[in-house]
Each structure stands twice: as C-alpha cells, then as structure tokens.
Length: 228
Image (cartoon, rainbow, N blue to C red):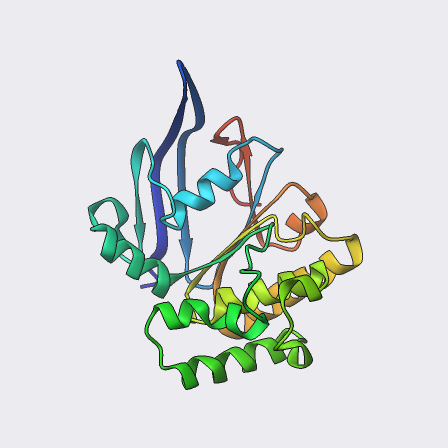
C-alpha cells in the first residue's frame, strides 16, 4: 500500500506576544503520499509558513501531532529530529537564506557535509545539481554576484542535495519577477517529476497554485477546502 509520507492531525499553533496570544493554526489535518504535489494557498498571515515549519520539523505544534516517514516528530529527541530533517526534508525559502561567505557550490553542498557525506561525493552531487538548474558556469560565484533567480536556483539545488522525499517551498517565487518566477516553477515541477519528490508549495498566487494537481486553502488558520 502507498502509505502517507506525511500525516498531520489536529495541528494548533499559538504564539505568546507579551500578554497576548496569537492563534495562527486552529486545527489542521493533512495527508500526503509519496510523489504528490500540493499547493498551499492563502493570504498573507493565513498560517502557510507556520504550517510548513511544523511539517518540516522546524517548529513544534501547540497541540496535534505530525508523522513523517512513519515517525512521530514529537517523540523524537532533538538529535534524531535533526537527522530526520536532513534525510527526509528539503526546504526552499522565499528569502533564499544562502550563506554570503560561501560560493554557490559550497552553499549547495552544506547540507550534505552536515550529513557527513564525503566531500568529493558531495561536490560531485552539487555540481550535477547546479548544472541541472542551469548554473554550471556559476559554481564559484558568491550570492551577491548572482541575480535573485540564480540565488533561488542555488537554494533549490541545496534543498535537493540529500535527495529528500519531501520538498517544502515557502513562496519560492515571491521575490522574483513574473518571468523568472515562471521559470522557477517550471524547474520545480520538472525536478519533482524526475525524482518523484513530494512537493508542498505555499503561495498566495493563484497562477502558481494552479500548477498543482491538489490545492488546499488556509483561511484564518484552518483548511477551507479539500483537494481540487
């Protein structure tokens, strides 16, 4: 059977701001199987980024539970959770989050080196991925020497270096012009098809969301619809 790669039940997330409490997620249930592509749509502040951070183990829910690759994230020790993130999850952020002192290849290889992949093996994989995203000639360029679209391509290659089954993309075209953003979406779709990666992409853009076979909309911290 094709068991879910990711299963979330009753997710709530509340942040405390001084004397105030801000309830961002209010009971989210979600399941994804291997190879699925889901667009997470919603206005700014609807809880999209918070949900992605919870699903990828970067934050913990106030209530509810998450299973990734058959493991309950809440039951894992911090060390085991970090290992699971390295092995199972790739993150693509709107702000790229590239390290300015490292060149493109070094940024891409960083997650592999943290996973103790031998340097030569990581570099070979990094060069292959940078070539695949059209940056074979930019391996030694620092982030400040790259355009926004090129930085996002480096971030995509970095997210894929450990061959994770789950890819989480948080507004990956939000800082890009429409043409470059379209190229990034085409690239993500192609890479997902090639590697049968499960992709969850948060976006407020309905044109971007329309590329996904399944769309979930977040409204005020709740899922307002099912699959489309």
